[in-house]
Length: 612
Image (tube, rainbow, N blue to C red; front, top):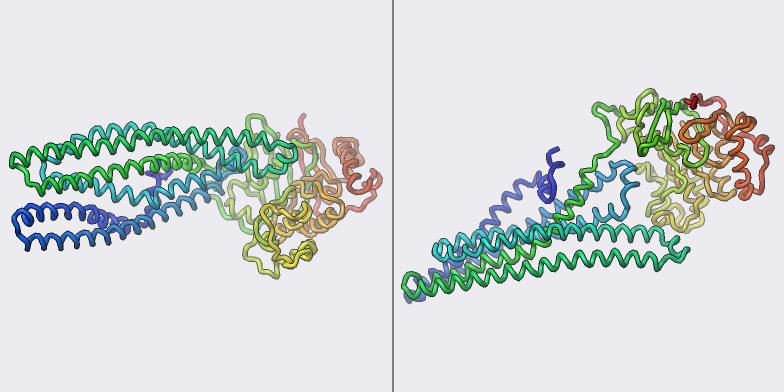
């Protein structure tokens, strides 16, 4: 798309599409508004030369009436222009903000892991606000004063071409000064945006980690880092204002020089009889129409430079290409059965692969558990199934279709994810359950809440499911947040479900509730469970032990426990940690305990590509 190759403020022109007629009408209004004061000064010239000096009261009275009418029309035109330009500017800001946020939602998880949250927030807030200031207020100043400046120059030549040339002699130094300011202020304001971004990122990080900061008495250290960022921001702003302090008085001084030159030359011309007094008076006022807009444009220039620097930052986001996109010719994923095949997949975040040609097949409705030490590749495998990343080699197939051949949105509508630390949004408990299925009725939400035990949570509050949840689920325990996230996944009715450490760090009573909820959630769905809890992985049809991106062992729970291997060693390591929460458990207990939610009839067939 050509607009994607544009940089700076010129890129905003794409948001004027559809506003052509309004912009054309405002252009006509702007030209008429700029011509009005010039016309009024020509009337002043006639009133002095042909009315006052000629003692023609009739002509003087007519010129006064015309002067008043012209200024009244100018007021109406300028009011119309200001309101129209402000509306166009806000429409542009609205379109830009929507495009920026929409583009962010298409970027891969890798982008968000590489960028600080505060840096991204600065693009959507302070940078867009800088553009908003220019487009809502500065755009009016820019258009009105630019047209007035041009009209004033034309008016000077209409009054007397000799005075026009005198005034124009001062313009080249003005343009040289403006160019000097443009080069230096652009770099200065770009540094201002960078320091603001760094400070915003640090604030966001500090707020998110405030509990840890206070727990380790790191308040003063973080205050010192913030002071450093704040001081850097002060230095960059001070330098930018220093440039302004040189530029704006310089423009004003040049205007004074031009005024002095016109008065001096005009005085000699009047003395020689080649210029009328009314023409000189009108020329002095006309000169104000040249340099007053020039001063206001100079004041605006710093704001425009700041907005241009902000737009460059925004452009870096808009020009970041999504890594996960729909391929040309990709087709919509209708209701899938859930037959999942991870076909000899190799994947690396950087240079070193974290998965090595793993090959896994889970039939529709089957349940697969992935266990192993951290860094083995379990979560990476789940992210590939969710198509948050694409494999470097091999393919992820669902019902025989490569995920890269399926429309991404239609596939993810049939995908459910329950994370170790579920995120709840600001709203009610019911809103969070309804998150993945916004069209669900209150009755559907209530049924799901009862099915997984969220109704027990709701009964603690007077408002029940309408109880307001603060951002992140503050005020709810980890287990309560997890139950709500399970209810959210159940209401979404996914065909493929990923449970990533969904029962970690939860006490035994809460775990019992979550285990019962998982039985309901897993029923009839293709599931991938990543867990360290033995009680959670027991329900799987097949368990894979992953080590260093390879499958080192596979089988059913009882089979793996009876065989000397990595799973048995892992189970013994986990036994001690679970005993602290559950009151103790032995290998005999593990082997004799019934397998809850077993899916022997839907046993998953898993083929591993083990290292030779």
